[in-house]
Image 1: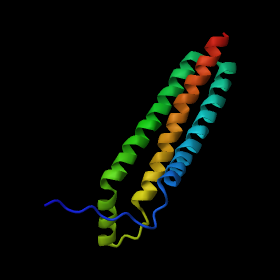
Image 2: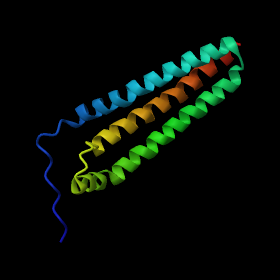
Image 3: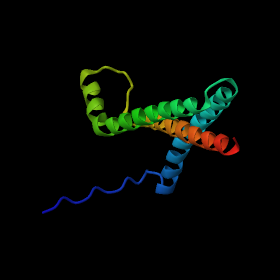
Image 4: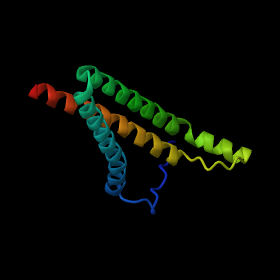
Length: 129
């Protein structure tokens, strides 16, 4: 016999609304990352080695992206266990799986934005030059 599936939560928002919230969460962080990368690369265009700056900026963005991805997957995999442990130990830190996933999604989005910003600005400048 197979276990019957759990009933859907009646209070949960529709899937489209949840997707919009997640897209806004990652999208705003990606936009911020792209703006930071663009401002940084325009400043280095005026001051110094532009090609090296594009590579370094992309590498730093990929580092943030990787950290966010690893942290998000760790929060998903271990979050409920950590919450249970904190409840059992009565630590009262207020750490939750949802907050950890949200924070890591923002870091992931920021890194993605930096990578996209570095690629876009680097391509635009090389096409003009």
